[in-house]
Length: 104
Image (cartoon, rainbow, N blue to C red; front, top):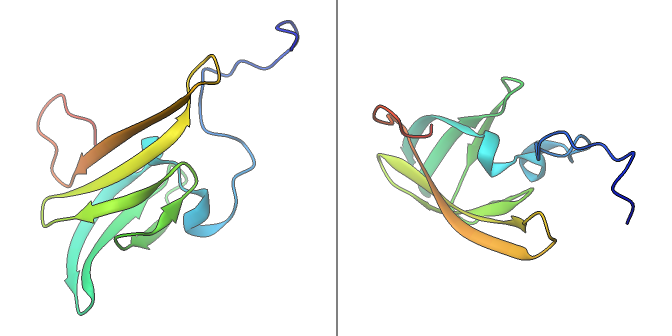
């Protein structure tokens, strides 16, 4: 693949994301609330555009899925590729009230 003339926008999220939960990118989600519902825990999250979504354990996102929701945090299984195209998977935990220096 040619390296010249390609858009290298810093590895941000893709531009053409599907609508709804399927278009949420784990790195850009902000946890706004955690609720105990009749069928288990529900995470209230928002994307950079300010849209609000309700996630449950097992929901599929653009680059991962919701693994676990507790009263304090949401755990995601994120999958993607590194700069060389090698598959990369990791666990990402986002807290409702992150302490200083932690990712929200």
